Each structure stands twice: as C-alpha cells, then as structure tokens.
Image (cartoon, rainbow, N blue to C red; front, side, top):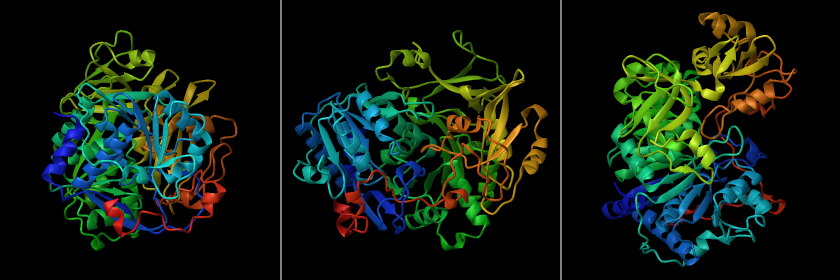
Length: 599
C-alpha cells in the first residue's frame, strides 16, 4: 500500500502514452435561464459538444505543475486547498497536485450557495480556493470575506479580475515531481458530509484511507488494465472518485460524462467501450423507462464490453434490479454501501456472486468489519434478525470531524468503530439489510416504521418513478407515514390507486397520506427528506393526484414543465454570472478546441 500520488507516478511510468481520462460533453446546448439552484445531480457544461482526453503522462505533468505552483505560493504540508469545479479533465490533476504538496485537498459541492462556500472554506482553514466559471458569481460575493485564503485560482477562460488564471500560472511552473515525502498516516483530504440536516461536517481522511479505497474497489470488482470506467456522478463526492480508484490502481481508462440522459449514457458506453458503469437509482430507472417507451433502441449501441453495473449512495429497490437483469441479462451487478466517513463505498457490498440476495447491502467489504448494535451508551450487539445501528471498522474510517471533537466522539469510539446512523439487520446467512436512517424512523402509535421498506414496495408500482416516505406530525398517533409520489411521464395514478396497491402491505405500514410531487435528491442521489418534511408538514400540504404532473401543492416549489415530466436531460450551468458575463454566452468556451487534449 502506498499514497495515491505514488500510484499516479507508477501509471505515468508504465503507461505514459495510454489514455487516462476522457471528458465528454455530449450535446450542444441552447442558452437558457436555469440557475444553479436548479442544478441536477450532474450538469452538462459549456455550450459546445466536445470530447477531449489526456494520457497518464499528461495527467502526471499537470499534477506536478499545479503542485509546484502551490509550493511557489508558500503552500506547505498540512495546508488546505479547496476545489470548486464541475467534473472536467482539470479536476483530478488539481486534486493530485494538492496531495503532492502534502496539503489536504478539500472538494466542495457544486450546489453550495455563496454562504455555504464561505462556511466550508473557513471551517477547513483553506488557504487556496480553485474554482471554475460556473462559480464566478458566488465566489465574487465572498471574495473579500475569506481572510485565510491567500490565492483565488480560476480554471477557465475570461478570468475575473478578483482571481488569477490557473492556466496562465501553471504554464510557467516546472513539470518535475516535487520532493515532498508523504506517509500513509498523513492527513490527505477533507470531505464534507451531505449536509441534508444543516451545514455539513468536515471529514478528515488520511492517505491510508485513500490507498485502502483503491484496494477495496479493485478487490470487489476485479478491474484490469483493459477495463474502461464510465464516471457520471460529481467528483467532489467520495462515491464517484473512490469507485474510479479501482480503475486508477491498475492504470485503466476512465470516461467523465457530463450528462445523464439515457441516450448519452448508452452512447458513451458504446463509443468508449466502457466495461464498468456506476449508476444512481434514478439514472438506472430512466434508462429502463426510456427503453420501455421506445425512446432509445439498444440495437443502435455496441454494449458488448459492458460487464458490470453497480449502484450505491442510496437504498436500491430489488424490483429495479429485477427489471435491469431482464433487459441486460449478461451484466454483473453489485450494491455498494458506504459513507464519506468511511472513505465512500465498500465497507459493505453485496458482491457480484450474490445476485440472489438483491435487496441486501451485503457483507463486510475487503478489509472491513461490521456489527449491528443497540442504542447508546451500551451499544450492545443485537441478535441476527433484530434491527440495530450498523457500525463499521477498517482502515478507511475517518480520522475525525475537523475541529469538532464532540461530534467525532458521538460516532467514533476508542476501538475504531464508526457508528453510521443507519438502522440495519442481519439475516441468518450473514447478509446485512439496510432498514433506514436512525433519524428517519417513523414512530406511529408506538410502532416503528422504516420508510425504506415502504419505498421499496411502492417503487414496484409500474406508474411510480420515485417515492419518498416521511413522518408527519399527528395529534393522535404522534406521527403518520406520508408517501410523496413522483409519477412516470405519461402515466396515470391517483390516491385511490396508491392506496389499493398498498393493500399488499400490513395495515400499520400503509401510508396515511399521499402527496404527488417531485422527489428532491441531493447531488449524491440521497432523498432530501428534511426538505420534504418542511414543505409537507404545514396544514396546506394536501393530498393531490396526478397524471405525469401534479396539482399545485402550496409549500412545494413547482419546477419547470420539463422537470415535472421527468425529463432526464441536464442543463448548462448559468449560475452566479454577472451581467457582463451573461453577454458573452454565445462565445465558444476557450480551451475546448482540438488542442484541449494537451491542456
């Protein structure tokens, strides 16, 4: 095991002229007025469609140039470098360049508002902030409110006056690898929790955790140098990057796709000969629905290399995988469970050999231990078949929540066990089933309801695209279960239809309230239940019915028609730009020419 910057050096030495990364913006987009607050899970980028790539030697060179730039600015071991970029070819070399200096890389969520960016940069004590054109407006708002930040580095053309051009600066820096010694026990990165219940926590990961993540992913999915990984989710999150780590470990090619339309995913998998694709539940559903509606024709694509489809970041409905296997019978399938505090996915996984246990999150991952325990403070192990809190232990467990010893002590004990906050149970064969988040359990009339179980049941309805079950206050029962249902485009479903379908559930598990509305998810695919609870708990949030759309529900924001119809296409970012920058929309984005591969 070695720090991951050394793995990059190995790949550059062994495969210097082979493709390391490909970036695809799949379609030329029309100018529109979507703001960053409506960003989808993945966003297409500039207006022009393009494909560009870099080799392993170029990857190494870019990382070294950025590392030397940071060192020239006084960045030293233990400093923090914040990264605020959409997925692009520059993202990973910048990340590795920061690690090369001994600094901690601090990836930031691209949907953060200006105050959240400031909060996270301040909390991490970042001395450098690297950002792209999509964030100019937000960064400009706080540029004079970041006293610890000594450099604002802009990645793109038309550099704003309050920042410095990354591309201009690195062109003058040496491409030689800096000689900064790194240890597996050194701090490597700060990742932020999802922040669905408030401002996120800063999670400190060591180099050992990142290196272990490479080995875990490769052990689980058997990546070889000939594999090609299709990466769609945002790189700021541990899920996308740590799944790529298995390919990175063996010097295999990866494709960064900026868009989630079913046709785009299938075309990228076909043209780039992708063999491994990691999806979120909504994207897998969209692909199957598009096939069912005849919107895509599988005969148009060469998917013969695609061997593995795996899903993580959220509970996976067994009905979805059953549908997938009918359409793609030759695909291997795996479920991956993890959290940022465990360096992303892999502390528990189903395993491709356990397809008969779909519905379980699996067994302890490579190098990991698990247990299921009762409530604190005793946290005594529970018997198989009983519900308790899932705890994990292994080399990927975080060091701490940065500057928050109280929060750290609440989830991390002296023996290295991380208490996940997820309620789970283990069957007699040792397979672990996720029941729900501890904070999302609904207590109705003294009975515990686990929303995931009800959601999995409802997702089997042919007209339901997505569903979230939440607890709402009730004067008699304390709480009742409410189902927020998103209907598939063109499908018809009303409250009576949902209630009739739910007769397949025990009476006490049936939702007492049905609301037809879009199901909000954060950039990692997790349902934003606090948002739903806030929007639906008021007296005016009434039952509705829909036919591929919905009647307005006060308190639930009505989005554009295309979103209500479940359109899976994404929109080019238009957030935070000043009036002066908006006037330049029609220009081709600099650096996207045929020379982009050498940038």
